[in-house]
Image (tube, rainbow, N blue to C red):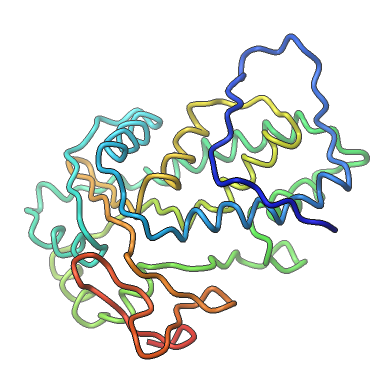
Length: 271
């Protein structure tokens, strides 16, 4: 197996409806060998500590809510997820209505697009079992061979924050009956790699509106908290240090820190 190091720029192919020329969608061993390079490309983007562009994020939120036919909410920008949670705690109960199916609706659209990729791909031979396995394999390089094993995310900032401030934040959110859904670049890095691979290497037709949303969330945004009337968009951390197993880790300094000063010290994932 060999690796191709890719420039971290969005792909430019947006020819979804033009199907006049023949395309070769066959997955060859040579193309399969490139998959780890796509993981590496999108991981590097996701772990960026560059500040977000607020104007670009207004477009992200607009496209994300429009994808599932919801009205555009008021956007509140926050310097950290901790700050966003405190903003939620200050909301009145009439403003914290949750879209209970928002994330599921978005993910269902994304999954249908991936299924469309597989319908185009020429795999010889292929059956439903190997299709399901290979999609999971593309989306998560660390998944065990057994298909019924749950997917483990590489890194989850919110889990880390709640573990660090569990008694305080969980109690306050529970007492105000606030629950939330999020979309995060950390959750979508393998999905983006999957789209990128199918489009760039297998030359698959795709819906540019769907890929634009995935691409924008990862390239431009931090964690997004989704509500009916409000949407909280968090900035990226200014410092993010991980060990080789993608656990928070730093010696004698914060492993993660945000522009508002919120930080967490961690040694190999232990706060």
